[in-house]
Amino acid sequence: MLWAAWHGKDLPGLMVEDVLAYKAFLADPQPVDLWCLQTQPRTLPDGSPNPLCRQVRRVTRVLPDGSPNPTWRPFVSGLSASAIKQATTILFGLFEHLAAIGYVHANPLRAAAKRIRKTRRQGQERYFDAAAWATLKDWIEAMPQETTREAAHYHRTRFLFSFLYLTGLRRFEMAHARTSDLRFKRGQWWLDVLGKGSVEGEVPLPADALEAIKSYRESTGRPALPPSGTDEPLLMDLTGVGRPLSDRAIYAIVKEVCRQAANSVAADQPDLARQIDSGSTHWLRHTSASHQIDRGVDPFIVQRNLRHASFSTTEGYIHKDRDQQHQETEKHTLTDTSS
View 1 (cartoon, rainbow, N blue to C red):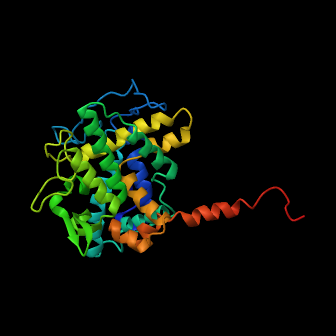
View 2 (tube, helix red, strand yellow):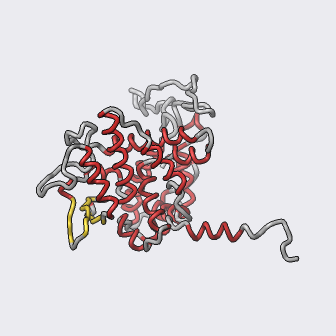
View 3 (cartoon, rainbow, N blue to C red):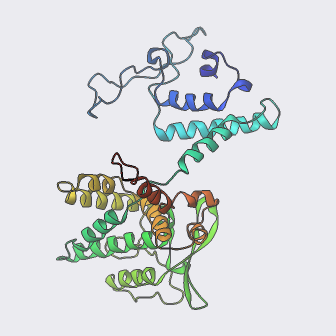
């Protein structure tokens, strides 16, 4: 409300453009001396720490005598991406309520979200292309296996990347997946998952996914397929005792593998290295969807496999049309080919 008032606007008059401007403002409040206690950026343009940036103590909005505190500021500094997301989520709920009681005509944050989603649907770029995925697989296969611990690390890493790629599971779904969630129906294997928004779903397990489970379990000294009634994590601690991994641990493993695989090709293929180094668990989910579609799996089946609420999300993984668009445009050159 302070920001709106400073711009001479009231809540009913806020538009989509104001919401987008406000989100940019949260990341970098300007003028900084008016809005922030900390006027120096945390890092310099080269990414190194700013020696002029110091921790500041928050001050109260009013003085003990009840008068306004002239040194008070709404922010310490610009907000992080997660803090901005939280702030906009709270505002979204506020405007939903205001719209419901008729104080505002509509929720501008809802319209802003639709506009952002529309721009994102132009194509999903956060995925490993064929060269990047091949590099990751080669790096994993080259992992040392001389000691017991090295071999266990190799088998677990191989299983994790293979299974996320073949199933498209989210990292928290992988962390909570258990042998008791495996189902054999009509000659086919499925995995029961509790997905985003606590929505139950079934994920088909292709032959390679089942083989990945068998190979990993055998590496821990267990039967290839869990006996009936067994309830163990699909992905376990490195010693194979049977403790589950947290979703943060899964994320850290994937990021470290991507970092090291990127370093292995950085000297000869810097662009490929940058792509791999940016990878994460969610990149594997995007890669699963993209590669399924590239190999001819019906996009509507991919939607069901990844449990997308909207098909428009799945459409972002269709890259062939854009590849063809670029290839056809290559015919447009400075050379006259008509003669």
